[in-house]
Image (cartoon, rainbow, N blue to C red; front, side, top):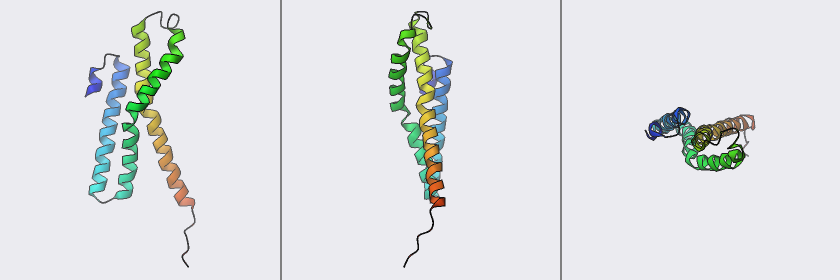
Length: 125
């Protein structure tokens, strides 16, 4: 696991390992659902897997965003320590890069399921 080899500290390592385990679990569960021909469940698990897969893109976005936002605090909050600054940015990005897309995916899955339940059945002539 690449997350175990991060130079940015234990918080980043924990976030990376959790991401790897969740991604693998969601992907394998989705694959199993497809093999069992449970395609509605397969779709839901693969939406989660996709959200976790997108973490590499959102990680880059959050890293740049936090670097811009926290740079004015480098001399005060981080005492001029560039490694502490970098580790903080990496830890924030490592957790937010997968938790926010996964929460958005869960919201979307719940929202679309609730919409389908509320929609009256269509009558055929």
